[in-house]
Image 1 (cartoon, rainbow, N blue to C red):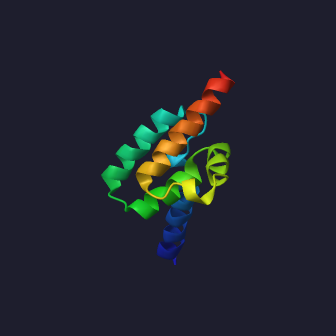
Image 2 (spheres, helix red, strand yellow; image 1 turned 90 degrees about the vertical axis):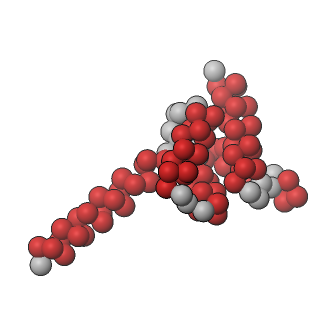
Length: 97
């Protein structure tokens, strides 16, 4: 019984904190992308999973802007997503500062 409770505890801790590792927060967009790329390379995740994590963890306003692009210009590859995120992020950061 203790083992199962411990396993549930460990699972809950990982679930609670694992998503916060990749969060952009107030971090500069370009710096975040560089750190994200390094983490993605270390963990050897596939491109679709990396795109999912970017969409989930980059600032919501940046992703919302990109998702508003016309379908023909919507990023499809990880490289295209990173370029779009940096471009939109830099635009927002230049108007915020």
